[in-house]
Amino acid sequence: MRADLRRLLRPGNSPLVRDVDRVERTTVLACVLVAVLLIPVALTAGALTSRVLADAARAEAAAHHRTVAVLTEDVPAAGARGYAVGTTPSVRARWRLPGGPTGVGVVPVRNGMTAGDTVEVWLDRSGRPTDPPMSTSDVVGTGIAVAVFGWLGAAALLTLAGYGLHARFERRRMRGWTDEWAALERERTQ
Image (tube, rainbow, N blue to C red; front, top):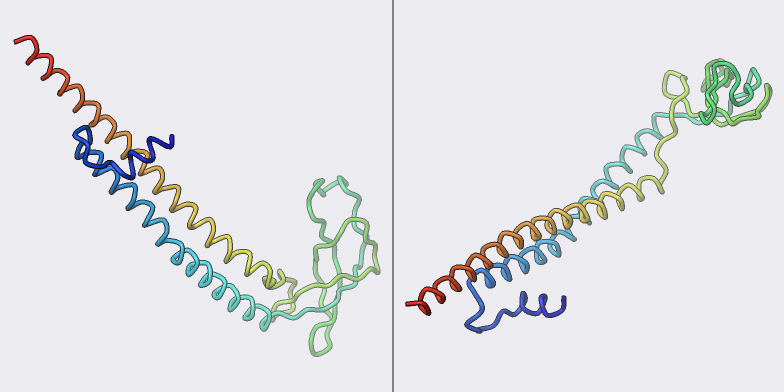
């Protein structure tokens, strides 16, 4: 392996070195260079993703209102009729809307809760329950995932392209050797 890598990166001026060896060396070095140059691109993509998601989370937080809801019914036992095991149950609850009126609706809860228990809910501008805005850790984690997996995907594509080109170069190299051995054999038999 080490000798192959050395031969690839430094083919030298040996008469056994073919043009295809030099082209392959240039191709491998170009793939490595592109992979290195893609690091700041991936980091920028991750940072931009985080910025966009952070702006969206702030907008959601400004448009939504957090309040406490009081459950008006017990949470059915896991596996009870109409409730699948492993899902988050939802039951009816009531809450106070900004400005005083009472809102009523279905909210997600934990198993084992009973009527009268309280749960925190997020409401949209119309007073209906909605998902909470993205947390800072969700925003940062998504940005990091975009950067890391974006670069890994690009590096994987470059690696696959490099292996594909290596296979073509190897076939060409072997064809060259075969042709030269055949020419040498013809010379020897004449």
